[in-house]
Length: 274
Image (cartoon, rainbow, N blue to C red):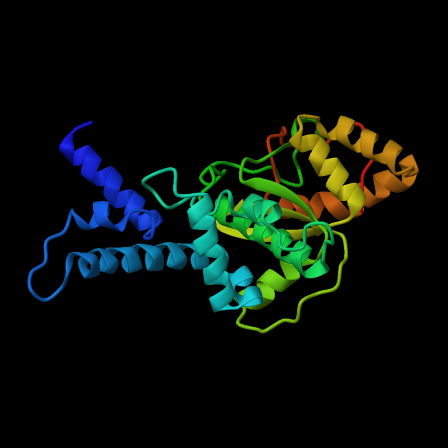
């Protein structure tokens, strides 16, 4: 290891854990008569942590609101200690945060609703954050209402989530500048899709979620809808009406689908969902 690499390693270790080996890190600094070596190092340690906190607040604004800034910062400090950044970029700084919260939950053995809500909220927020920079379909054609269902497939800037709480509503309320109360438990299914660089949140029923999950796993429209209709005992005639009068047009307009031949739809009517 070169002298520079060794100095970088020691400096990085001191930033991540200031109390671990202060003498080794302080040896990198020289006093100028105004600041001691320890005080000089402390400037970098505070600046590093503040930058990390600022990034995490940008990635988890609703969670910061729910916990309060002080408690949120404490969580970030513990997370940084257990899961230091793996890359030079801070873009994926929060990637492991929801799983870390699950593994570090303070109510182990006696689960509490508020902890479940915070974990679900963190998962939803990071899914939204990821979608902003995901590879999408901008600049290329989307499916239209005139497209053939047989060629439909999900676009790439798309994600599904199932939560124990209605976290999307809480998240959007915070983003609007409101101060929502913590919601009661309620199973929530949601799709996230980006079109024209705008991320939209779409509320789903359980059958709708199952259908889109099947397509996400590689099934085509006919197979996914048939599988979902069988699972939820949906009458084929009712399923056909609900698909053509409800989900299809809304989801096409939202930009969920790409592909499909243009023109008259000659495919068998999918067994669908409202």
